[in-house]
Length: 132
Image (cartoon, rainbow, N blue to C red; front, side, top):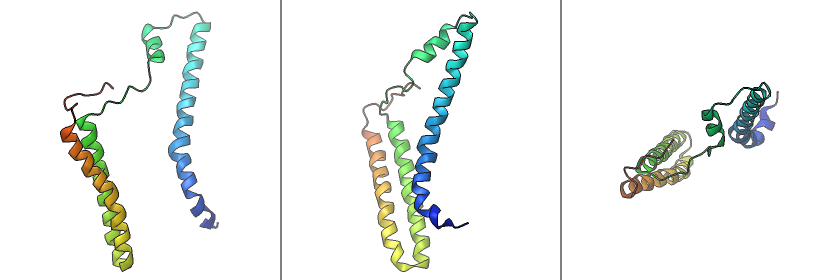
């Protein structure tokens, strides 16, 4: 099998795996839940109030910026930058001209992560934990 065709298709396959498949699975779960509720109603069974409340409340709570969330995001981005830096050093061992471009790319998420960590110290919602 020729893998040459898969290389240009890889970004599109990745988008399908990351975005489309979870959306499809969530939609399937909702359809199954609706079928279960429909079957219970057709049989004359009363639905518990907790189920009705769970189905009618907003699925995603409003995002409130918190110091913990900013710190977590910053640490993740710094780690991504560190991983890219390690990749740059490894590629620099093979080809000297690969080190600087990869290190420049590694600096972008790392510096954004540093900014998030700094912002976590100045966040006015330091003690606020978002409702989950």
